[in-house]
Image (cartoon, rainbow, N blue to C red; front, side, top):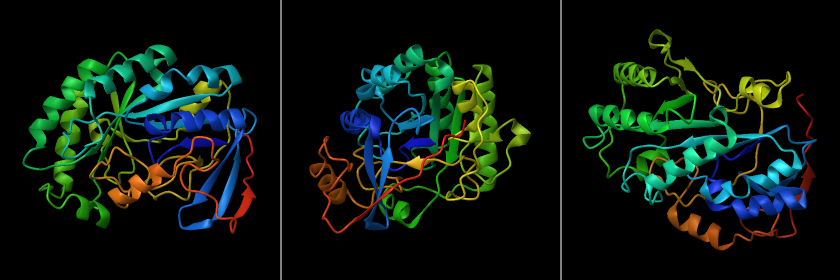
Length: 305
């Protein structure tokens, strides 16, 4: 099985000690996001976990612990987000240069095919206009092109929560013609640095500018990493436009302390703080405590090899 670590929160940045403790214990619990009484027990060993897919904006806290995964025989790769926004959009990103250093260090350790750069999501405002993105994107390409093979982009979806959390930032709706113009320029810039671009969960067809719809949880890359053919279907629990294959996500909503204004996985600031206060690295749950009224079910995990 593929295990996603995690779309719902940044485990490498904030919960790396908990994750490694769970690796040592050999299991963890995942709470149903919509029903706290439903708990899945996930077994963590190289027989049940074919590949971990890490999602992060700062892998540095996990890097020095990766040898534990290697020694146990786990395989993995990273989706690594680096965007050009300030603290008005991403208040939890304290030092972008440190984030970039973490990216390059990780790539040097693992190989650039295992560290994927996400310039995601793209949003527009009077401050973050198109020209701002073109300049910032090229600067990042200069820094990162030796350390990755591709860049993943998406355009901001204005969910109700996103509208509420960004109402004072002056964001504008991105129209189809804007997407095409931005994608054309970014593809041209990326190409000059030997990078190619794929989209994440976008319905727009950008193949005319050599940008294809991507798979963030990617069976093609996992086959390269494992060195064998795998059999896994598209994840039907994700949006129709999502190309990812099936995985188990071990994260928990309302736990990410980056506090990005566009984030769909945090409900409110106070809830995140409370979740973090309830975090215990030795607990099988990422946050919170069992109330002894839960049903714990062992998740069936079959190898895709």
